[in-house]
Image 1 (cartoon, rainbow, N blue to C red):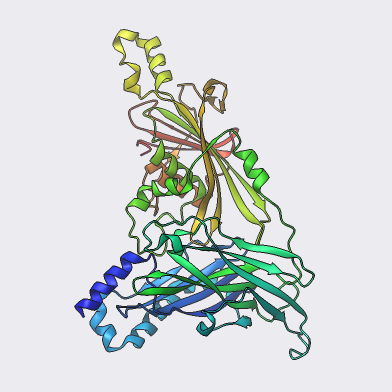
Image 2: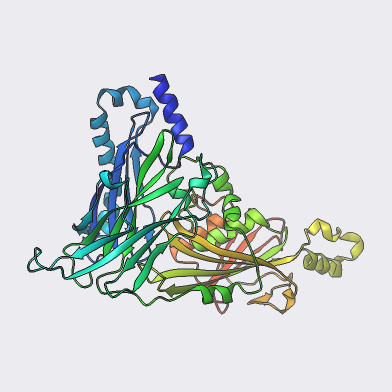
Length: 493
């Protein structure tokens, strides 16, 4: 028993998800409109024999997990004796726990529509994957007759950067590309990894397991490909499952390439390493590597931008942050869509020197501390492009930074951006800082709360340290002319 418990602990350190020798999966179904898809994985961990179960709920339009999903249940080594006595009863129990935890979301999203299998392959085919798998859509009047439509799905393994750095065989890590081939010879890339998400762990190989439709397939029926991810574990490769949306029948989408939009938005900035930015977040550094989702997985885009900025540059002693969040819907090169991109501009104005000069004018230089005491420093601009993915509510696609040299010419609504004059507002509500997973700064928590409540819209201005040693004021609205105000006697960090 001791040897098994040690194996369990080592397996937890080796993989971000506690996978079994062979993880089983079960489709729960689709929402009535076909937008949402839910499935469950479960099994016994390799080595320890402990049961685990997870329910995933996927927004097929955004190709992302629904916020709050997935739902996990399992047993740890303290339950080893009971599990060894009745392992499958314990597995049945954790499967029920995961389903019960997911039940409110499944009910709210109306996930009651059954799935129809169009293709399925068992583990016996895992050793010899087909380059292209042919999918047939049956004739609704006579399924034994000539199919109504056929197409091919090509699954390829590709070399891309990984979101984790603890894998035993880093040279073997792979992402995947899923491509659809029409009978007329045209093709469409449904998914292509730019990097391996941390939630996927040490992924090494992929196999197409199944293709299902929402109910019986019709012309506009959503389809989903279930893909096995074989990843490095403590005792060999272990199986995980991911779901990728496939365009509805007849919808070979007209691709809208977002590269031009992103290039224009990021013009003039120095590109930054996304993995370095993510790794700098205190929530990541303090996280248990065995968890299924990073602690910051549900952070709203605006809060993530502030948390990254705080981890990299930090807040000035006297400062003003101005944030613009532009939401753009695109049809990506692939399945799903439209997908919402967040184009976030964060301008950080260090007002230490301006505050010093203002006090010198009032009290005289001999009675005012030197500029260094006010935390004088450069003004900077950060830009982020984010989008939802499975495992992250607002994943950073790209980011850049530059110095601002003309702060006085920037308009911050109530006052020039480089001015030390405090913002003016008739009334301010108390600024709550709820306990938000992944947010470690007070400002990040506050903005996450405002975003989730719908109070923080397209324009935000944050001011701190100008009227007293502490104090945080936030103005938010669709424009500087239409503002709501919050205030807290606190610092942003």
